[in-house]
Length: 286
Image (tube, rainbow, N blue to C red; front, top):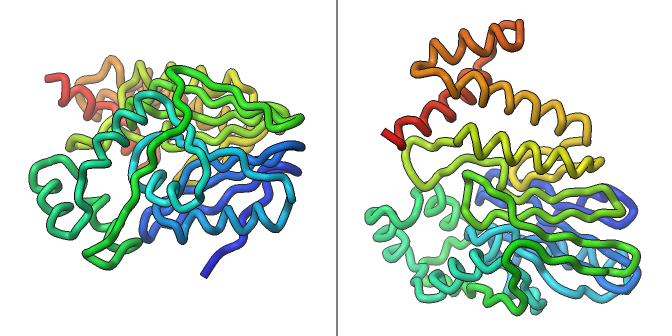
C-alpha cells in the first residue's frame, strides 16, 4: 500500500523511513521549471510513493534523480523511474561493481559468508524482494561529479555535495537552498562494514561542523525522524561532547567520567552507546 508523503515546506516532500525492509526516507523537490527526486529507494514499489506525489502536486516535469550514496536501499528502485541518475564519482565506482553481482538468495548468502555483504542487508533485501530469482537493475549514472554539483530547478537551487562520513566513503547531502532543507542520506550513521560498528571522533566533529554551518531550517536523515534546525544543532553539540569525552579515554568508564564532567549531568543509556561507538574505533586501529 502506497503511503502519503510528508510535505515539509511549500516545495519539498519526503517519505517516512520504514524499519521493515530498511526503507529510507526519500525526497522530492519541485521548482518552477523542474523537479528532483532524492534517492532511488530500495525497490520500484518504494520509489513509486515519490512518483505518485510528484504527479499529484505539480505539472512540472521531473529532471533527475540524485543518489546520496551507493547502498542498496537507496539505489534499487532508481532505474524504474526512467530518470537520469546523478551521483558522485565514488558512488559510480561502487555501482559499476554492483552491476556484475547476482542477487539470488544463494549469491547474497555467499557474499555474506565472504564478508562482502552484511547479514543485516541480506535480511532486509529478502523482505523487500522475497522472490529468490529477483531481477534487480543497478543504475548507471548519467551525470557524475567529484565534490559538488548545483542544479537550478527554477527559483530553487539544489546543491549536491560530498561529505566525509564514517558510514560510507561516497556520502553526499542535498541542500535545497531557498527552502532551508538538507537531505542527509546516511551520513550521520556508523561505519557498518566491520564489526563492531564504529564512528571516529575526528570525522564526526568535522561532519557536524559542515552540516551546522548550512544553518538549515530542516535536516532530513534517511532512517530516523526529521530535525528542525535547533534540534539538529542540539544533536550536533551532543555528538561533539561525545567526541571530546571519548578521544582521550581508553575505557568506557573513563569516557563516562569525562562526559559527566563535560556536561554536568547524569548519563543515560544513549550516552553510553554513543561512547562505545567511538571507543570501537580504537579497536579497529589497534
